[in-house]
Length: 221
Ligand SMILES: Cc1cn([C@H]2C[C@H](O)[C@@H](COP(=O)(O)OP(=O)(O)O)O2)c(=O)[nH]c1=O
Image (cartoon, rainbow, N blue to C red):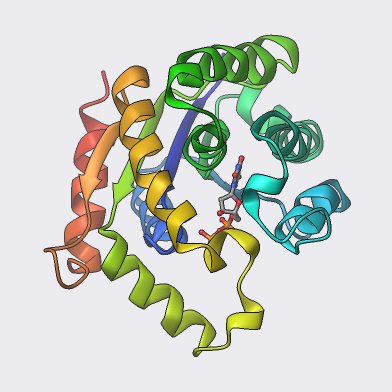
């Protein structure tokens, strides 16, 4: 029997990786066999097109690469990761905890399209990644919701003010702002669980957010 696939997603700078590691620890402490995966899979050659895109080799602006083209770069990277690194564990009942997944395409690519094409895009994405590529559907998507201003500060801290280290998404504030809107739209359409991660000024304590995530995971059934 396949295991569980739980996705932790969120906007850039929302603390996904930190929380995924903390949640993996909690699940392991409960005796679950957990494999932690993360997308893009930067350490693997399958992420080459994603790196070219984020590095600005196709265009300086996210909008210079259309939503469908960019989505396929990420989807192919996911496919390679699934086949090489977690298909067996997933099929033999392990819990797979993914930092970002198909949901990230909805959040970060859909906004390149006019709003009246968002439903069509979500339908295409679902069909392409889950039906055609046969990637497993998540049992649960948990979205870490962090105000743009707080996330921006965390991103700045990460790069120490060095603009050149940011990818084309991180450099574009208007684009990042539009991702908040697409995330809220997709979360509603696809029944993601939203967790608020800041008090409007500062991030909430890590332990508090981890507890909220664990509550969502436990109340899944
Ligand atoms: C996994 C994934 C990421 N993305 C975007 C989100 C990010 O802006 C960018 C790189 O992801 P990531 O390195 O996770 O960004 P960060 O560490 O800043 O949170 O790629 C997609 O557009 N589609 C996807 O499927």
